[in-house]
Length: 579
Image 1: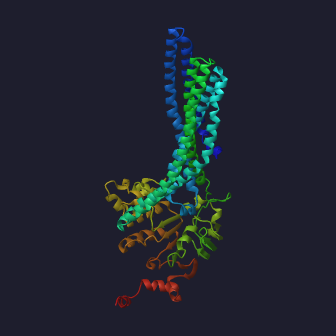
Image 2 (image 1 turned 45 degrees about the vertical axis):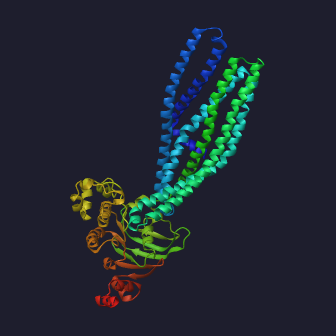
Image 3 (image 1 turned 90 degrees about the vertical axis):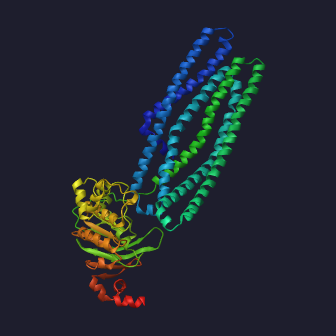
């Protein structure tokens, strides 16, 4: 995992190198103060060498000025190394998310994914900058202190430095406990984010059902689990810092006791004793940095571990020899298709269908029967258990995802629109489309007049998920998007089922034009909209139980006839039912 982490330094290696150079010279600057102090106490002051005292004082000021500039470089550019690495990781993660199969998003909450993309990567950025820098500065300070103090008195230096292995041992012993605590804390943060994202997205529903108290209780439950997880992590952190703080404080005790004995016996001078005290306090800060690094390391690496868990999720599998789908006629064939969602029970069983180019197939039947699943399989959103789906005689698993989906347009009941302008949302169907083409698509979808009635026209912002638009306006906007895409195959998945009769009639005209010259699959509950389909298939419990035209299915007297009659009972029958 550390090797994978280091790979992200490569694009920033030049900036990282100069950051480490600056950090090295900061350490060297800090070493000058105790050295000059020792010389002053042992030589310049006792021998009254005022000129040298002033010279070295001025030199110390110059050194600290250089250190100030170096600190600016490290704080600014060093942090930018972390920011660039974080941006690269976020870019890779977002690209990977785009390649994940539908099944991944079926099983993972949006808030949880967002927590990994935002929160976890922030801590990784801090580790990327401060981690190597703190280790490098601390190492230079400790090694430099040891070398210089050894030149004064090796035995006293060894006595003092014997506490460092004890500190390292204690830090490593606490590492595992902190790792477990911080990982659990991150999981709980992700749960809180997921609950928050769901609650905010559904705030209108919560208000409509006066369930704000329930939402608050649900959020507080996750929030309480987060508090307990943080409590565990801070308990481990408290034990870690309390123990390491006690060990570093013992450095001062050892210096005073051992240094005092050495000075009392005349082994070292008062100036040497002062130098030891200054150096010990000087390298206690680097030691504390190393201690703080352990917390930072746990934060950053648990974040990176969660980053790796996500980026290691298997992407959609496209065959290496997959080819482009060109000159599409639109013939679709299902051959003994069987499909299961994950570990659930079988959703589709032995589906056989043939839709000739330009024909319209309607799928009807009870909710949950498998109609929408059939539609999702055509663009190869899910991998089949067995069987084959062909487009113009070519198996869809031998077609690249991009070229397959480019030739398929989908209009669903639950329209998703992006927070942006009307123009941007229509242009999503073809990002290279001209302004005139966008307007033409809007006209064909019967929404141009409404757009022009808005003060900002096509630049009108529609809000998150198109909240500023009515259901019918959203639907027409999605239809305009498909007009602009101009696919050979069209899927209408209950596109008008949530609309009132007047709006449905208006949108149905746009849909009828959209279907012309295209192979169309329609999922509908309102059977009046599909009577003229070339073929109707009744899907229930994952099986096609009836197929034929509207008239043929009525003549069969089966499930379709029951569905049709339940929607179109004569008025006298309805009166009898009311009585």
